[in-house]
Length: 272
Image (cartoon, rainbow, N blue to C red; front, side, top):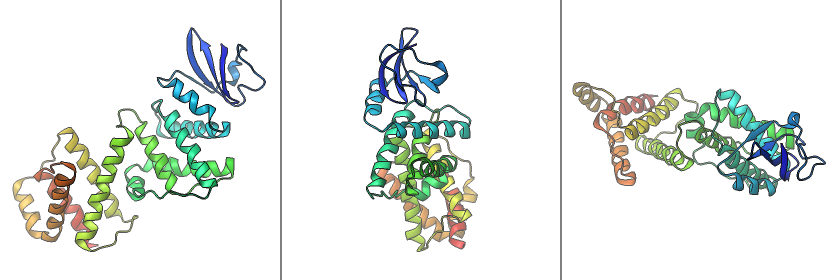
């Protein structure tokens, strides 16, 4: 396996079985040059990417330690989740982390407006994000703001098999955030993020959006639905506002039988 191009001290482009691949490993390019043989024991990751050129360009323009940190986080995420993440994580997360580290060093902190929703909707991914922040502080002596844990969580979530792209994930999460804000405004309440009813509501809204996308509908008989509308009229009026906003702002039709379950969650939150 010969080196075709050195990207940085920890990454090289190699020729392997007539195929161009990227080999990553600590110090893999140390004192090496083009056409030198790579020590197999130095290779920690070896892969072919559809976006090889883009990845190579990225690695030429970021510090080697940023790549190393990103790859460690990806490895931890795959072990924690017990699955292989899509290859685009190597570009997306590495680029994001490198920029986030630069911003932090310059004293620039970006607030994540969807922080609470992401923290609840993608709990495992958020846990990985929090681990990543601690790991980067340990390795680089840089403490990223907690908002970055949510950004990292999104990158990991969208890299999981059969998950949508970042744009779709952000859209769905933002819509859920709007629905939560409508509930707060309708009921004139403040919601604590660690409130179990709040967490259950967000999780339910996520599954509601997924069901609408897939065409699935929960079963609730008309008698029960009508009873809920009458008994919990305040919560029902709030849910009607949510349905109207969804249709008007996003072109999403909330099925009638979805209303009943959302009414129950909103009422539980209201009564608390």
